[in-house]
Image (tube, rainbow, N blue to C red; front, side, top):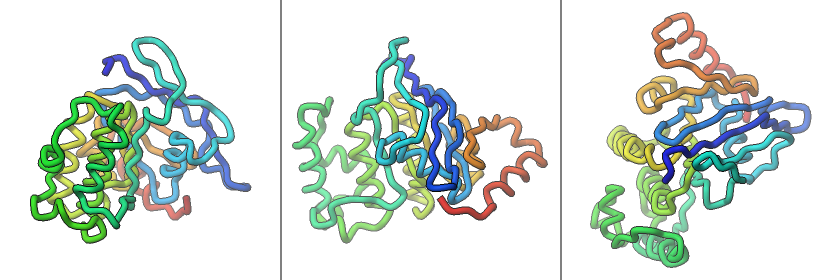
Length: 239
């Protein structure tokens, strides 16, 4: 992947009836970093991701990729999207699901490895690999969802609160995995937990009242600013 990969959002906006959820979102992301998209539940984080994934049509604005200084439109294969609630075909076993994914993406998957190598990489135990996905824990389903996105190697990886409901051990494994991936793609990680964003992310973006603001991590040493952000995260709202 080119080291000059950039992802730019220009004046993106979205409203639902009379409620403005996103208002003039404007930012440029670079690979090599994990960006923390910080906002209370209902701030519009998922709406932003759905607009970028084109699951929801934005009211205005644009977004595009620049590779080695050349601008182009975002293609579906550029974006990987990991949902907070894992979506996997529960009628398949872990092995069947992974084999199926590799087969249907045979022409685009580079550096293909064996199925067991992929399971080893993501930390799924041998005894669980032949189980139905419906019998996987939430954390294991989340790992499988993450794995297929890693295999697909998207330029942009959108992570919608992926660690919130995981136990401590699996959450730490996932954080280490994300840190190892950030040189290869642009990672945007949404969360409503300030400490998690500070621990994992290189840059922090606060989404509040429909607007996006860069928060310098060094500024979080200012107790008043940190308390103000925490108060913002505790506000009630519905996305």
